[in-house]
Length: 476
Image (cartoon, rainbow, N blue to C red; front, side):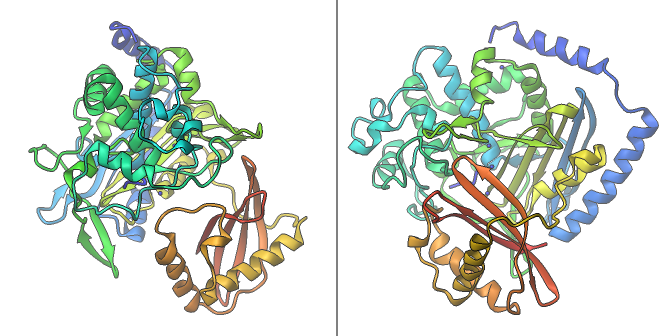
């Protein structure tokens, strides 16, 4: 399923959007000369980053104070036919599509067809008793305890909604609903099914009529391999450094609510205006969507309904990324700067957040990702434990029991990949703490670790019971 990997009422509302855009357009914006300079710098950066990542094509959108600073394609939408990327090129959304599924859900809430507090058993009467404590809100915020369907499905087989639901019934919950946060595509698959059932029509039709049309997203739609769709990009992946076409998946798995959309840069720029205007839904609904979830402990986790709710440069930042079937995407809104950055790539191996971070820094140096530098290590016993964990990974001794919960597929593939990576590196040097964050009830530690002449960033999440919630290792 997609990692698809964080994450607009009245019929007169389109006029309201236009009015807001007009007012925003009168706000202070860069001069023509300054804007031209920014575009040249962005062009150079994007092309260098594409080469570094081996990304065939990318579409970049920059909106500042309601004005489109840049809407441009780079590279190729289709390598075989040498078709260039343009602002109208259609990409797959990946998990950026989750915010649209959340819109479809909230439209049903406003119509009185469901409630955020409704238990899942209301919509899935055959579900196991353990689901009685899971609500619609838990699915929207990834706090249901439901693990991913990844690794349990045959991606080349079609499934009905009922069959997908039954697969979910068989998944044991990883924690009591509401107590933790763990990203779950399964929850958004179920949200799509719930909308289908309460609305009496496909959730994609709800999006087309109630979201895409009023927002001016003229080419946005659910994925369909069969239809002839103008400007559709091809998706790619790297296999041993060589670019290959995306892998095929069954049509039904490209219609689920976890991020199965086609979107162009033009669509996303229109969507950004709708988000800025808080259009289509009521202010109360938007408040629900963009409020960090509160866990049962009382701690908050920086995620709303399909949006990661964080900050950058001391100011709010709302964002989400996505990856699926040869495409990766990232959409960020830096509220303090009235700046939005949209990145759509046709590479499964692309890291669109690197484009976002680089461009944001050009627009305002205060938005740069924090530079990793040593900080005081007040928990040397944790550092010692995590140094030992690194060697445990190297030796292949890591087990599922070491984790509080984990994504499907990490064992054995993910654990083996980390073991193989470490086998190519020299012994680890001293771990140097560069960041410690609290996320909900968990702690996230990031270290710089030298391996001979190479330096890596090593990140580990720990639950209150000291088991792992996250493990990451990448070159600095």
